[in-house]
Image (cartoon, rainbow, N blue to C red; front, side, top):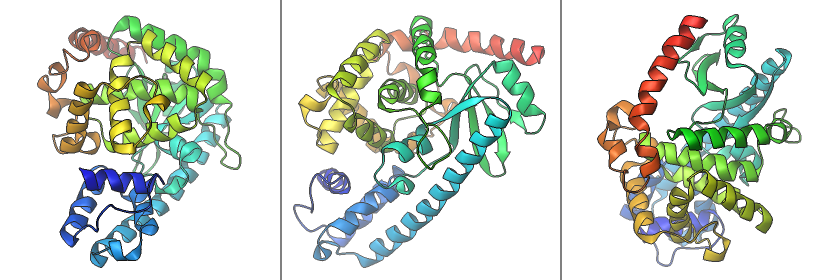
Length: 347
């Protein structure tokens, strides 16, 4: 744990070296953990920063560098795809912005191409039915859910087209979140990055949206260090007034609990000072979250990171931590089943 914490803090520039030289076996362990968490690219920055004598395993360093270079190449490919998807949607008459992975790396990361991306998420301004029907004329559209669908813009790459960025299980909180998205849409859809050719939301939006996304992952698929790394960079760009507004929104949406847990991880692993956090860190629950992150890896990959594999136990073990969300999961599942039947029938 101490070595991983130091690796992270070297990568983000908090410290410049390990407190003691890691053994070759410890370097193997660090590489395995970074791979499990999908942070090989961003943590490679630490290998370039430490004194050479601390890098006691050249074979691991070489393997790490190879992975970093592949991640950087894929980052450039994803950026080009984001630009092209934005152009396709614009020609169809839709405003859009890139969410999560590529959007976050482009706006917040000092080395954008070193963040390991999975798929592309794009939020589109328009009617759900109209978007699906228009895209189906040229592209394969499948897995249509209330808040998103999957579209085959390019072979071998998953693109999730969002009608709303995310939904919550608690219907009251979900309505409040939809209102927040509606109020934030114009700003998000016009926040174009210079020279990129696509828009991506700024920090105040992401401070709220990402916390809802993290809660969904905690309940359904598992949270990884990559999620926390994203939030670290978002938080680091926020002004005091933006943080205060984010606190109000997070409380209103019932997200203060998960946020306090994330704040613990940011304080403990990333070294963020307590007065820079959005809420006081919840130490006991935060240790639980950190334990789950380190045990399960990115997207809960070790524990079978999918809704079906994690099963009911993967949801209801959080009943005491997030009761207002967990209570509504069964009802939300039934409602969504019938909604999908009705929507697909109406197309």
